[in-house]
Length: 290
View 1 (cartoon, rainbow, N blue to C red):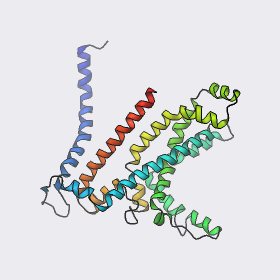
View 2: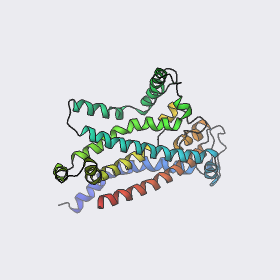
View 3: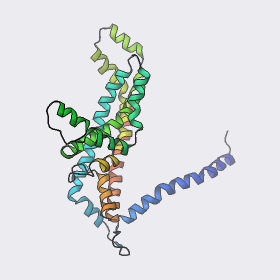
View 4: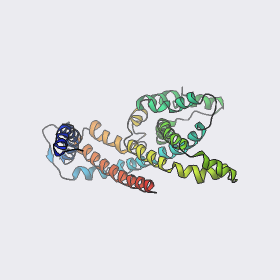
């Protein structure tokens, strides 16, 4: 049983780590918040001045803001839809016994370990390139003109690239959940005459609901900050067609050198991300209580 002295010693020993962690989190956040209230442009050193909420007003009234916000939502929802549906189908497939199952499982989860920048370069140059890409060659084989994916459907292309990266993660989580399902339930349902679709919708899918919720939560956190794929493939264009909030903040801060405006955008993104996180945490809590 822990005594008063042992508890005090434990608090004393972990306090440096806690202080370091708080400093690591709070100092950048506090500096971002402070800069967001300044007129701070790197091209005008020494001319910083307090502007109140002007940077926030400037950021949200930017013509690109609404487009970036919608693109962020479309990117997150699109990737979640593809990875969850695809993950369920792949999990059902990989749950079946077949020759070479172990190798196939490794190949399926391999894309998750490829760095985002590398996968974006591979897709841009080897698959989506309208001159030398794989899809262009396939189109030529059928006598069709090559389709310039990154110019004509930039956001859909990025959704496809990001989905390819995150599909293995969803598959792995859903496959693990599927393997924990009691097979006796399925066998009993089959003996009672339940069809495969009925067994899937009334037994498997409810069993996967918690795993699906976890996939949604974890992926949403990361998908809100997608950046490398956009920078490598489209640079947010054409125009702002594939710009999300993260890329807009990058443009404001590092291409236009407006640190104040970029910081205001960062604070807005943090607030929006926390609203989404609270909503998702409540959804997970309800699923766990069910």
